[in-house]
Image 1 (cartoon, helix red, strand yellow):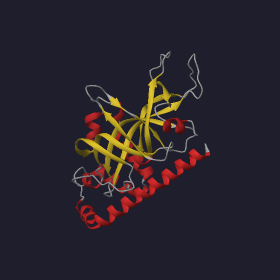
Image 2: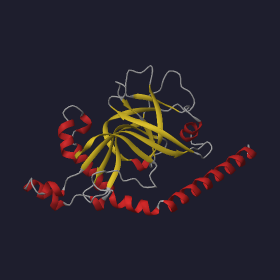
Image 3: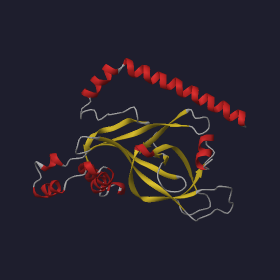
Image 4: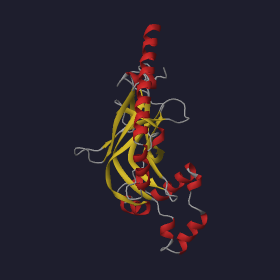
Length: 264
C-alpha cells in the first residue's frame, strides 16, 4: 500500500507540473489577446469567465431579462419563482454586501417607476447545462461532470444533483433547478443556481446497509453560488417509502464518490 501511495503521489506531481507548464505557456502567448478580450467583454455577452472558475455554463436559455419580469412570467406556473426577485436581492445582500441595493434606491423605486428602473435592475440569464471540473480523490487527476438543468431534456425533465462545499457536517447535496448568471447593480457578473436542498432524515428502510445515507428533498428553493459546487451526485428514490421526497445517496458510482462521501 505504501508503494502504491508513493506511485500515485508521483503521478499526481508530474501531472500538476505538466498542467502548470501548459498554463504558463498559454498565458505567455495569449497575454495581449486576453487583455483585448477583457476590454471587449461588455453587458451584451455576460460571459465573463476567469481562470479560477472550475465551471462553465452552456446551452443558454433565451436572452437575459430583468428579475422582476422573470418572476411575473414564471411564478404563476412554478412555485420556485414566487418572490424570486425579493429572494434574489436578499441573497445578494447577504453574500455581496458591497453590491446590495441601497435603501434610498428602494425608496426611489416606490416613488417613481421610470428612472429608478435603471438604478435597481437585476439582469438574469438562464442556462441548461454546466460543466464542472474537480480533482479526483482517487488519483488526484482532474475529472469533469456535465450537469443538466433542463425542463425538457429529450422530452423529459432532468434536474441533476450536486455536492456542495459548506460548513454543515457530513455531505451536503442539492438538486439544481435553475442555472443563472446574474449581473449585479454594480456591473459584477455572478454565476449561481436555484436549488432544492436535501436534508438528512431519520427514516430507515427495512434492510439497512453500512453507511446508508437517506435524504429528504426540501420543497422550498434557495440560492447557492457555483463556487461551492464540487461535483455531480446521484440520488435514487427510496423504495418501500410512500414519501416521494426521500432519496438514497448512491456512493458507488466511482471511486472518488465513494471516498468523498465516506470521508476517507
